[in-house]
Length: 124
Image (tube, rainbow, N blue to C red; front, side, top):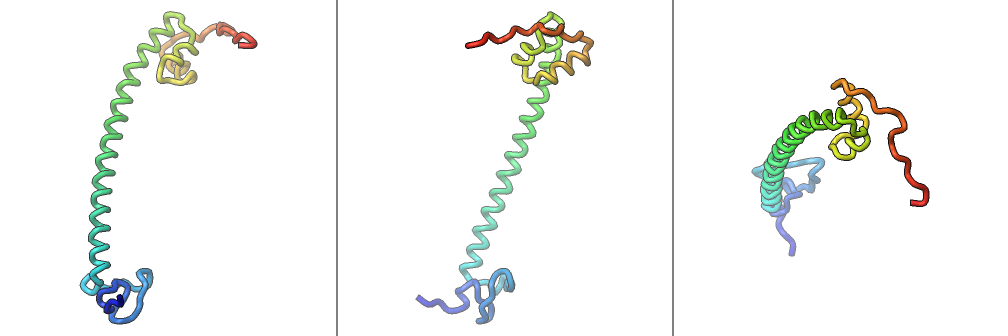
């Protein structure tokens, strides 16, 4: 079926024009392009709103995470002061070995003695 030029969105006053070269004013857009643009913009608005909601939730989760990490720091210090090895404390906590050592230094916990870790058995 051949449609007249005004029903084709790619035609502007009977002259073929691609979207990248010539975009007619909204009043002269073909019905297909007007519908496509309307649906497309609706999807964009929906997607933007969805992104705003997801971003807000992520920021809320980050605040909760920071709060929990702040609550974990004194517990890490308490375990380190009770002579639990830093490696074991790091395995139990949300912090890496380096962070556990930095927390210990910041709170005046003396460094662990060298060679206190158990060596892995060979063949295991």
